Image (cartoon, rainbow, N blue to C red):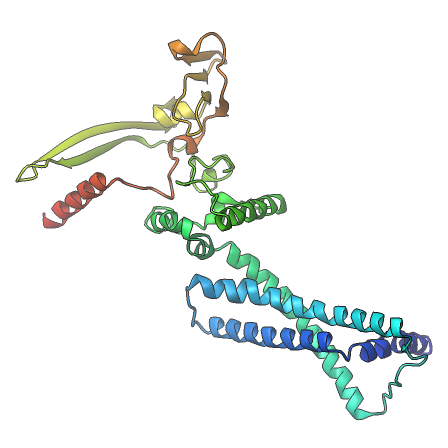
Length: 351
């Protein structure tokens, strides 16, 4: 205890007393008020949310998970800024006292004040930690991705009715790890600036250039080697005549896969091998050159007659699931196809 006492005395004389003296200024007091108000508001909202009264309004999430935490931290920063400003002002005026006002721990009022400062400091640290976690979690939610930005409303609407509506956006668009998270947030900041300056591409560019490969995204849930075999697809089309005459197209899809004897068959089986292609346009729809690696190690090249000799210039990619299933979670149908689907559904319901 004898060794602890001098340390406590030095801390009290060198830090506590000057901080209390210089902290009595409008900037620091305003910072304390802002921190207290924003902290109490955030905690109140978290408690309301905890008891199940959740509001899915995206702007409430922006306020309570992003703006208020920033205001809270800003208020905390104002406290040392105010102390520094007042110290500089008194130093220029030559009014810094030789001895700061004495701190009397025998004064119960002052002791209670110290207790309040310690409790609020611990509470502030907890609030900052919780706010940081909740803010990061909210920015990873489909609600934030799809509703906060008006540009994404069509994509979000298609996502909600897709087969992947239960998969969070970040599972495909960000991924795990600090590097992926940082890269995504930097890219998101760039997109936010583009929206503010009205310089973002319209329509939204497709395909997504920085989407991770399918082996990292899709294969977390789907097994590419699973043998599916053949699938029968019946597609109805209704004519524009008075009776809306129905025409059905029957197609057998040779999906294949890897069978029990490890044979690769069908379209999925073919793509379990190594296939590369070159796309000469941004949409990856003009493909003049394809190279396939066969089971025996040889390679077969399919090239357009106009491609010339050798590999043409363009984006060279290893083909994966995303190249075919490029709208897996954001499928858009044309008005004509939508009417056909409604007609087919109504016919099934009638029968």
